Figure 1 (tube, rainbow, N blue to C red):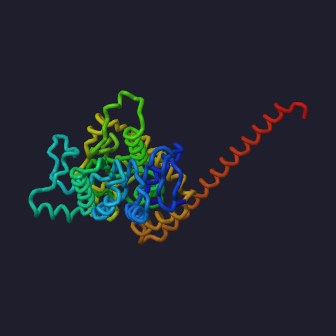
Figure 2: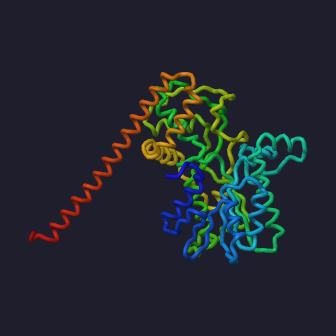
Amino acid sequence: MQRFRGFLLTAYAEKLSHENKIGTGHKTNIQMTEKKKILIFGVEQLTKLLKNEQSEQTFDAVIDFSAYDVDVVEDALKVLENRIKMYIYISTDSVYEVCKPTSSIDGLSNETDSIRPDNPVEYEKLRRRDSYGHKKLKIEEYLRRMQAKSSRKWSYVILRLPDVLGARDSTDRWWFYQMWLQFFQIINKPIDLSSNIKTSYVYVKDVARYIGFILTKTFVDDDDKTLSSINFDNQILNIACNEILQLKQLLLMIVDELGKQQDEILFNENENTEINFFPSVTRGPIDTRKAVTKFNWNPTPIKETVREIVQFYNNAYSLFPNERYDIVRKIRKTILSNDELIYGKFLFELNRFSTKLANKRKHDQLFVIDHEHLQQQQNFKKTHPEL
């Protein structure tokens, strides 16, 4: 089991694996189809690899999941510009944090709102407040500038994502909250809410599927005439779940999926809490109408998203003990640092719960094996009635 990191990359790689479209290149992180060349990369590793490669290898698409320093992308484009047709960059709704506030009536930030302040003082203030958003927007600006003046025929697609929800979340945010809610009666500490604003979320599997759609629509013949007019060249798109939620609403949906009563969970509004996982932005939700109406973005309903993620982390209790222990340590440090008695009870119940799940999984596996063995015996008797 890999550590929980690069979970968007993992989701996309799993998608291609399930479709039998890639082989696995663990050392280089390069994976290709037989007919099409699709490169999944860490920018630094890619640049080093191609600089050392003597061939004129070309690629249809490069998907950049991780870059947040513009100099890294500059280095990458030096070796990629003559080798690619499309650069897909995974950006963030944090870019709006360093821009002028949206002027839309509904308060949703749309793709045209990524305009920095003219006032240098305000520019610097926002840059310092959100360095992540500043760096991501700087990369966007660089890609747009380089593509506009390039003599080579390559295009970009920039996907702006809000807080990403899904399995193997390297931030540990989801599992932290789910574990807190699951053992709330033992931990007995109100859940801090740093903000009550409504924001956007996106499901990691939806992002993976959508990248696949972009590539298919751009590089593979498509018989669906209803989508023939879609052209992703040089597009910037907000993509998110259709539902816009407060953190409390999201957490109560997890409570429902855990089969617990909402009135058993206590919340505490505390803008200064150190447990400040969601939301990661202050400007509110993003507008996805462009992606939905013109570019076939069709996200999973949020209830289904929550159900799938809760099920994954329920299974993770027994499947991934090291990662589970990481969450336990964080809970001890942030919530139960001064209460060893409650921590001991919490640890005991959690271990018992994990063991129960592990035993259930073994039982289910044995049942499947026994059922298959029985079926084989019955088939053998039918084909050999003389025995």
